Length: 113
Image 1 (cartoon, rainbow, N blue to C red):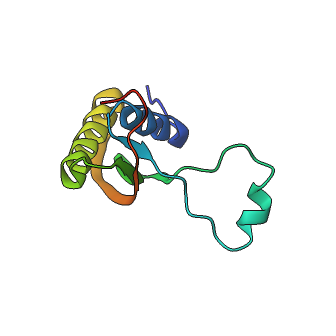
Image 2: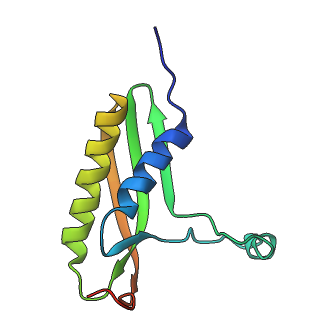
């Protein structure tokens, strides 16, 4: 019996995993010329998270914003490991790569210390 796992499920697994890592957030996707006007009516901008699948292998590309004062390299490695592990455990697919780009730095949230 074959089970097909949609790309949106893989994207949701990656997004949920990244949301659980303290000090990082998925950055908003950069807008191309012309998209700025189309996005004005939309409450949410697309996030910088892309999942591609070729057969049984998955590649994840994500842009992150990291909280000021945190280790960029440490959080990027943590994000890579967690996304890879969760996708492989939940789907049985092999993760070829998790490419992380740090796109910005955010200020710590109020009440977080």
